[in-house]
Image (cartoon, rainbow, N blue to C red; front, side, top):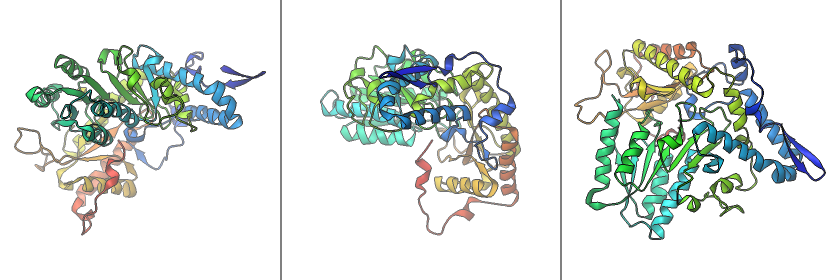
Length: 468
């Protein structure tokens, strides 16, 4: 319980100190079901990765903040908002291994964090700190919005963008490291300066856990100016220690695997980062120039409640054995178990070894489904949603592994061109994955092919790139 003075009275805020509440018994299965009873029970929701989830207790805390604002917005603004956000930044700093709350800024999402970094890169070109043609390095599977941010800001300002081609399916972290080294050498060719490397901690589609600490170390050794880690999916999926990883900038969403409501993410900037004071939120407010944490804490009148309930999400996770680490460990074990079950049922395989998975895994679909394009993948996904009540992303793999003469094949000898990305979160049960298994098996048995869903005139499916 916290109180904020307001004239001769006090405004009560009972959200901020949630993480320090008295210990309680471990959460039960019945309580987990109650926390997520607002989910549509008719849908097999094996796609936590895209939008995440938020338990009822955290939603209730959010509603209390919203009512506090509506009851007396002036008192909320002058006395409650900034102390509440400071507690959230401190909770993030503790969970992510930061050097303290001043290193943490709260933003809407990882896409916003990328825009903050890329805006600075663009200014550096415009103001002559970088030379035209200096390089920005990114992975081929960098998330589409971040790719577009790189092109909208950095490339437009004069950067040469170099991509790291990644094999998929991937056999080991060493394969990623080898491709990264080769691409970095290309980026540096002719003495060109590499101003920024953008590295995913976990790629979105296909989902692969990247050896991010090793890649950051390579960048340091090879003289890359700055490293930005896009870890949109990381916190809550895998252990995160931003100081140990060593990047200049690190961002992760809190509404995907950290049980916060949409939309909130953090951007970590090392306290010894000399350009920290030069990074600014793209929405300029009265806080401009007061440091990114404060600029991000006030971008005008809006709903800040998602950013204010981070301590409540931490409190929710503390009800599980092992806290956040225990949750992510069990989710990893379960998603590998469910992915293996699906692969065996379909005669396929996992897209990466277990050590390159967090709480998501790619599972090959039978080649006879004929997934030959991103449009095919999206139409099949819609069919699974509408006809079978299964929500799962589908990836079209149009690139074979470099040096491999043909794509990997399933047990029937058909090339595997499509993969599902399944997630596991605390609310998931085995029966949901069995619904997906049986739906795909029925399509195979019925002789279904994605060609049956194609319109006579191909229509681009723009919805595919809008979310992770």
